[in-house]
Length: 314
Image 1 (cartoon, rainbow, N blue to C red):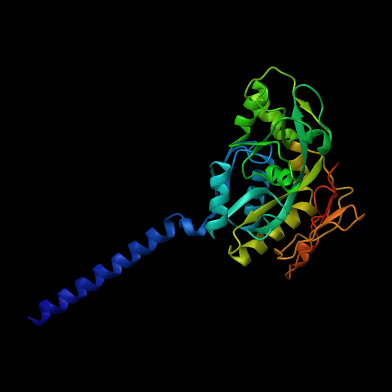
Image 2 (cartoon, rainbow, N blue to C red; image 1 turned 90 degrees about the vertical axis):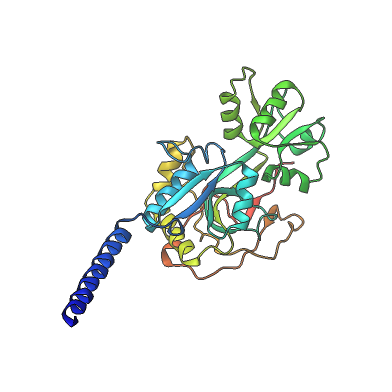
């Protein structure tokens, strides 16, 4: 009887050992858990964000893909409507976004990882050029996307003739049909949407009104060690010309030769101030955290300071 019991115990021990070996092998072979993958939300906004895959996913998407690889991170890019992407970004501490315009209204809502580009805000029209804010004030209606930085920019300047639209496609259709007189957006995006919709009318692009910094961003409670890894990766990409090469691929001008040497902002600030009289600058003072030596070498693109943006053209 004792012999049978001993054999039974030995058999059970062998079975348990085999199960442990098999379970370990399965865990090792299994793909990384979703929690180990950085979740990235994006909205269609060419040339910054175009697709999750392919040879031309958009310059900001391509920058975050390369940065993730250099940082030893895996990412999953999910496209969704812009407002939903912002909601996820503000409420999910695991989420990043490849590109978002930085402005005082958004400053405290997100963590600004690094500037990846700067884009120009302009008025699009069909009948005549709109080159200044004063000329735009005289129009009957200007189309802007709800929640976008272009809407915020004009609202802050007390524009009363705005038509708030859900997305760039809808605004383009309103301009094409004559329901708005102008469309306030970045030139590359407006031209891309216009061409994709197949409109034959010549889109008139006005002069630069304001230059807006574009940042890679994340939730305010995103893990700081991962933020640091991305900042280091962006610093390396700045130093070795990778970002310039990506910009050139999308037809953007490389500003490496004349870009100012500056650290990537590492923190948000509760302090905002309006331009001082005659200063010609909108100053945004930010607190700094400790950053690595590589991060300190990052230069902004193009040659504008994230703490001081040129005053918009009146």
